[in-house]
Length: 263
Image (cartoon, rainbow, N blue to C red; front, side, top):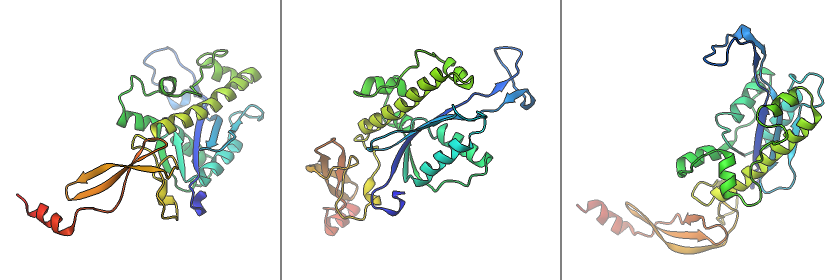
């Protein structure tokens, strides 16, 4: 990590998995037994990026002899997660993290060292009322530079089907699609960050100077935040508008006692 430094290492990542292939007799209301599985799911690719750093890390299964053997991919992903203090995903708490963990344990990996997990899907559901919380919708409405791509040359399931079949053009599109997911997710998180849902990085820092969730230390006073027995100086970040407050209670001990005894 940053795990030995003052600045945390924040990893954005996204997985793509192969589908489960099986034998079925119909299209609807299928209850698939284990002995109907022809081949189980596995990782096809992953894309990752350190927040605010240049360069995207991308790995896939296009050149392996056995596409179902994803140990090489898992090794690279494990190293990144083990190094990260914080990870950012879209729907990663339900999908990406659990899928990665399943493949790790099935292939004999120990758990990566613990990390804080920020999921933009969870944040969207909790703090906003968007028409859709999908990455495609949110990035189309909020992001200026990177919006989630659609894979037009191989639409829908065709992209996964053709990658499994070894189509190099499909793999090229998968790479572009997977990388862009990470870029658009990074931009989306930065847009969401000032709304009281960014990571407080000060707990990772040894310095006494407080910084905003965006990394800026340029604040302006913006009134006070009141609690039952507290009054705290409130600030606004001049860079992103996020709110912060001082930890010093401006209400005297005498007044606090008066407030407690007031009926």
